[in-house]
Image (cartoon, rainbow, N blue to C red; front, side):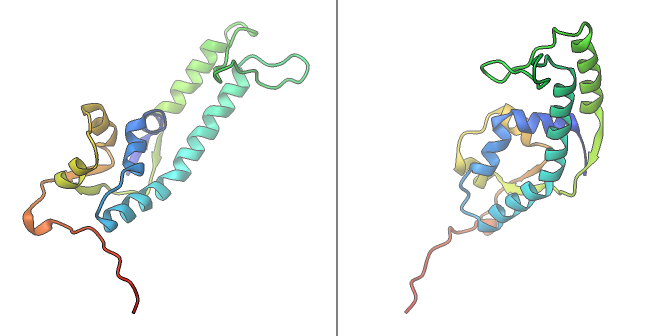
Length: 153
């Protein structure tokens, strides 16, 4: 599947995507599929985050003694030392966001019953998840029972 880095940015910056990976589904196969997808997408996310950080460090304000990037109390960076650095950063960052990456994932099929049993999902949640999930209507025959532990005799 091809994604843009802007899709990866939306995932990283939006708690809706993380909700998918922290939700407690009863269907163990669904949980394994979600975990597999998360592992498959990690290299693309790490490459994107690393490139984004390198761009920030290249164009942001630096400590004059150490030459290292300076961030504010909440981790924000400023671009005021070198005239035009913010514009150059934005240009390069927009180029990065528009690049497509190939990710070895397929959509996860999640039944409406499974997704609604976890928590409330907003339209924003679903819009972030849309490229990664395929919501299917649950049927009575497709109902999966929760796992139960059995003690050894």
